[in-house]
View 1: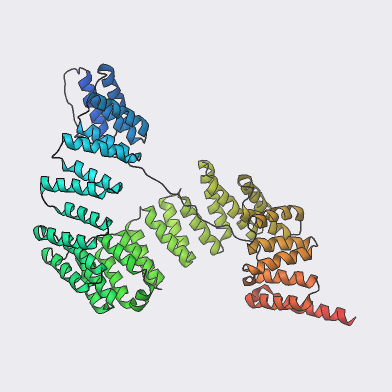
View 2 (view 1 turned 45 degrees about the vertical axis):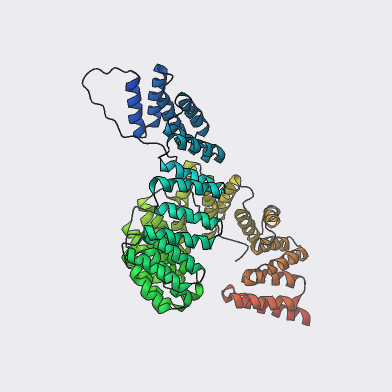
Length: 580
């Protein structure tokens, strides 16, 4: 059957969390059996205590009390500013902070927060002005210099950024962070020769493994592998097992095709639990994008991935990467084992369970999906994604009555939460499932509910129209619904087939043929049902030879439809008519 498309799908909810940094002071606890004199100091301390406990609304009341008693209390304005910023009210936060600065313009924390506000509102030049003034007030505070240097970089003023870094160096001497910051300036200027000279000279004093590894990277980029390895080895001498340097050597072996040395070098690194799992994931993830490399080194990569998971058994990122690798390279049992173990290890994590269920869905392992989705729903009865996955598995397992119950549960939750997206899905799928079990009345009732939510929802319009056509009733209504689908998706072969079949039933075979020919151009030839419909239309138009060709093609696509027998009967009747 075509013209009909089952409306199963998943709804994914994305949650965006905004974090606003605020100054945190040590918590103050007041214990006293004497009567409390609720003066401005009391309200100030109470406000600070509540602020540190994240009780911002209560803290706001206390700071307002302070201002009632002392309108010139700059600290109260500062804390109120932080509270406004925490709720993403930047305008109020800035106005309150301006009042604090108006009372005390020399306070470092007030000015520093104002600079951050300027940065968040894309007023870099104002932020630069603030930091330049702060340097005059606090010439030994290197944090200000770093912030200012970064701002100059953002403004692409390399010379001023270098001047600021020079000042930091005079205050605290040569440090790794200064060296790397200056190196970044060389890189921005595309002066790699100057960068190398500077790094080599600076590192004579520093002896930093990180700087040595950066020098090695620069030589690697210029294909001077021998010098690169010298500096990578220096980094490892300074700090044995230094991962970035080992990665550098590994990459040189890979690039040269020295795969034996590559795996000999990288395996101990992957097996080292002290090396960050995230760093390994990033490198291995890039490696697995190289299809030729993966195909050529499958056995070694299998071992490497097993080592990675064994080294970091509690790291979900490692598990996801390894399972994705095994799934892509045909190791489905291994991928399934990893994901199942993760789901078992973290039974309370909906994210991990979702990953496992999604994998079972991808594998079309409907029995396992039904079992695991049911387990997940037992832990989270209101999880709509889990409910939908269970319904999909039940449908694929031909448990249509159970699937209707499952989607009815989705309907119930979506109605309660006024979730029209999931409600539309529930109505659509229950409509489809009801037709599957032969309950057309219920099917059409749910389709009508779906179309009340979205009158232009093509999957429902198409299925509703097609089922009416199969019953050869309400063809005008079916025509109007199907027309909407082909007008919005004119190249969709399923919708074209439905529309063409309705035209055929309305005694418009010429128009039907036009739409079926169009469907053929966009994938219709892959559907036995569309080929069958096309043959029926051609037969009605007395294009008999062509009709029998398409019936033969349809039968070859799906012999279970009985098209061969129908075609033979048509030939017999045609022969009888010709002999009369």
